[in-house]
Image (cartoon, rainbow, N blue to C red; front, top):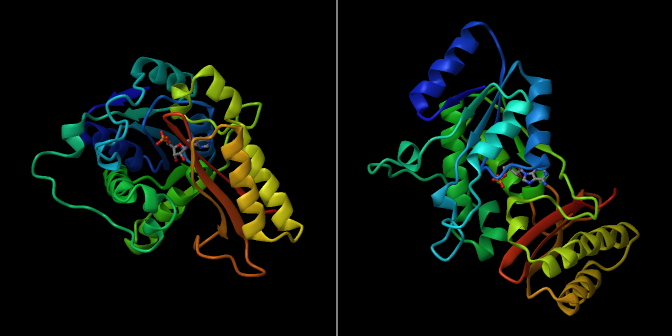
Length: 279
Ligand code: AMP
């Protein structure tokens, strides 16, 4: 496994693969890797000859009050996991390689970025779209993999790749969960033991909503009941727990696929999760 710290080094390696007509996959991550990330790596390996994983904790997607400084950084452990997964190249640049002092360009996907997460983290998707656009242009992979765990992010990136005519297949991978249902996340490390015990409740509530809505229940009523249930069980604040159109994330319309999406706080940890409403 090769490790590149600069764009030039990384491009030189990928260029040689391309010359040999090899297809390239990219999984962008912020490190602190878990089975969710690795499942995306495997998806990429199934679809391309060479696999690249980027590890970059992107300052542009953190608000000043958020956890950029305390976000878990475990590079050696990550490298070991990626080596075991037969990854060909890790691109792990320092911040100044991605955002030199003269960096002034931002990418904004209007509309969908303002919904849901955008209401609570207004600059978040600008930071995500900007760094993902840069990574896709830097690596120029044939296929790039993103998790459904961050469902709205996947929608934003699909829209961005389409709008900017980026020549890459953007694929979503299913959410990988702990055995009790909690969606794997690097931020789960922040949970205290008591919070960790409570955390699967979020998945239980969105699963219950999906089943009930699928059976014809009133969306507002089941979402209100789930929100109440989460609050009563000890979740500190429910940012949203909603059922939306699975493609536009706008209000659902009869006959179209729907998605349940939720964000809620357990102590100082913000959990997000989502699930399809069975058709
Ligand atoms: P992150 O390191 O949190 O920025 O995530 C990097 C990629 O892994 C993103 O595309 C995430 O959606 C994806 N991801 C994170 N957690 C999971 C999970 N539990 N299952 C599947 N994909 C995930």
